[in-house]
Image (cartoon, rainbow, N blue to C red; front, top):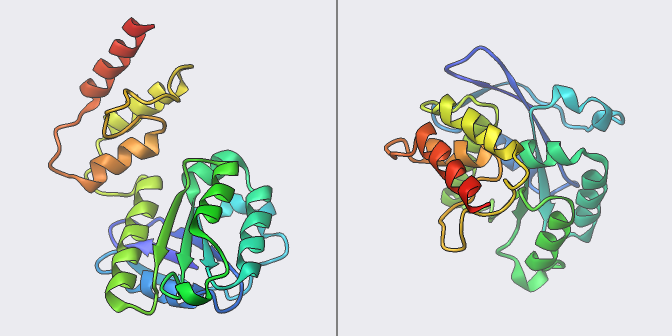
Amino acid sequence: MILRPLYTQRPIEVLLIGPANSGKRTLANQLISCRDTFISTSTNEELPKNAFETLGHVDFIFFVLDMTNRQSLKVLERALERIAPDYLVNRCAVVATKIDALQISLMDEDRVQFIVDQYTSEMQVFRCNLSDDRERRKLCDQLARLIRINQLQQKNINMSLVKAAMYYNDLPYSSRSIDEGSEFSIRSGSHVASLIAMDQDNNINAEDVEEIRDEEMMDK
């Protein structure tokens, strides 16, 4: 599946991985119809055998997890084992579907989160009932924004802040939170970019990140 943002000429290739009837087609159709965001140029129904060998051509991966199908969890685990950790952090997310069918659910959400955390604690896990129109539209708007942010195509991103956060992330102590009561922790450039993109009227800037970094160094 290839999506092309309306305000740029560079296409973004998105890969949906999941067993049959997990909601891939529904998710793809909704992503395509996201308001003022993407148009579709092509769709592939099958995953090539060498797909994991050519991930350099894929910009973002969504693992579609059917909560009523244990096979779905096996597909997720096999994929997580074969994808590089840094790719999992910045270019992947899990979409758990059929969460409304609790009476026939074969998987526990905590179990899913535990498995994902074995490979990276940074990957986002979304939960949605794709049969609900409003919920489906809201989810896909969030997914579209996530793609744009991680591909640095979200409008109004302060690139000075992103670069400062990426520099901060390279420091040896950057994996810890600013403090226990903080609303966010700077552990990757994508997290800070998310904050900027989600709140275009915020007052966070590159100087704020530099000040936080200096305070951390003083604490050391």
